[in-house]
Length: 411
Image (tube, rainbow, N blue to C red; front, top):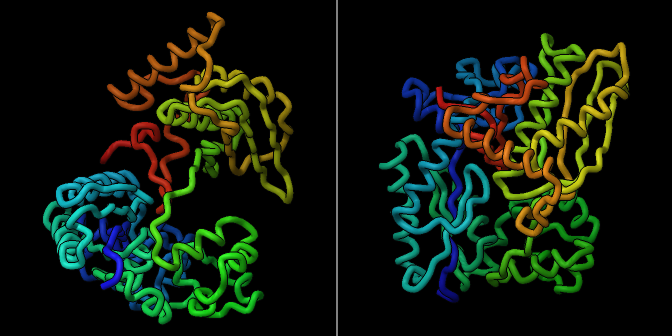
């Protein structure tokens, strides 16, 4: 069988739509899509396999999806439910094998150790994981499991059979088992990289596998190409070191919030959310970008604010307020965003020396504790009054919001 197996990769199938089918039995077996808002002009953010059989998929415009499938069930997104089910899935998997890394809201992986690495034992663990999710979370929640010698190939294996698959790529099956796939079946090869590979004469995985380590480094123009050379050969490489670069939020303003005062309140609300997340992540920031887009071509206002290394909300609101007077007048705001940059771990930052900064840190922690105990926005900063329900939680497959930080509760 070649090298023993080292990784189990789990990919939930049509996750958001599956959660809706679990919550609403009347949706089971029916073509179902999840949308951010109920409008024909928006896109489907998830489609059940029943909907996919009609050609409806993630990214399909709702109006188009209705024409493809007149019986389509359209459900507005419920992010809190998807996050809660995500945590239930992790708990279920942990009853079989410890989850090593959560990669997104619908993907996670587990490292195999000892006898778990043997082919039959690894296969049994894959089956047990699927059964645990079915019994402990819900029968509508199906997943595809991949097993291989590294996490990259385990993910490839999980993608090879959907829905409800269990696929193994052993060391002895590398590279031949990969040759039936297309280049863009490999995670990390999007449209841009696919076009670049084609420009270098690479049109298949067999072509890619045949290149030297140096040739891949040249194509990728970075050390990433060298990693690919080793990963394609089943080698289990350590993950490259990463660090968080930014924390931020954005929001498209509804018509009732398109005034200067309410726009300011929404920006303060975004600052409040971002600062809370920053503290939970144990980081401080020394730069903040604030942007407002207005109706009309190329109408926007943007400011970059330098700060001392801070994580308290008060200091950030104060910095924002110092530049808000410079905004353009007489325009109708369309959307706002704010992003914190230049992040460093708070543990590596000197304790503040000034009494004012110490008081603000203590105030921020006190507000956090009150909101965590009694519910977000039980107490908040006055400038965000009237906007506490603005900028509701949005969720993507690669980003799992903090329910407490976002101010959302289960209905």
